[in-house]
Image (cartoon, rainbow, N blue to C red):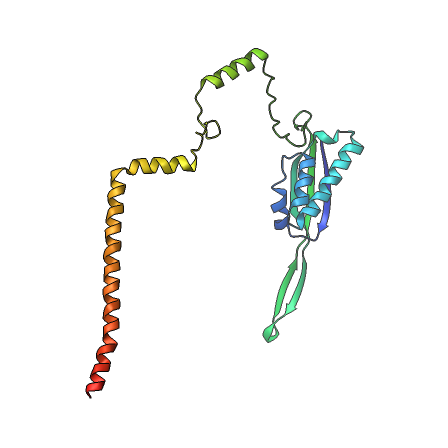
Length: 218
């Protein structure tokens, strides 16, 4: 059954109303009203009023179910045009046309066509519950872990640290005869340095005596 409602002399141009009407055809009434509430066009409010009027007519006058109503057609026809003018340069008149439109919404009932949503929002995926391990499975897992070699740093066993004295003795033993030769060479170098130091000191002591003899001869 078709039920209609009309709105005449709406102060909106037919072109603007048709842009909204084309997007609402063959939609359920509830979805069309929601779409009109979110449209950023001023003509959407006028179209929503006509749709609500057609819905009320179908529900109250013909006892139709609200959820089964679907928008079959929305007709937009031009109405009378108000002509106004704006004075412009050189005595001219700039014409202003204030257009009107007639909106007709046709609604019909289609039982079973409108899909009713059972759940408002999809539920988030829930984590799966792991079954508790049986004693036999736990024992098998322990045995497998014990048989496998240690692969991580925490599983590896650290060797005990050697004491400092033991390290020193091992270093001396490794040095052997090479260490004795090095010591002898160092001792010879030290004696040579001492001899050089004594010679330089004796030279310094003999220099001032020469200066005094030269002065006396003068």
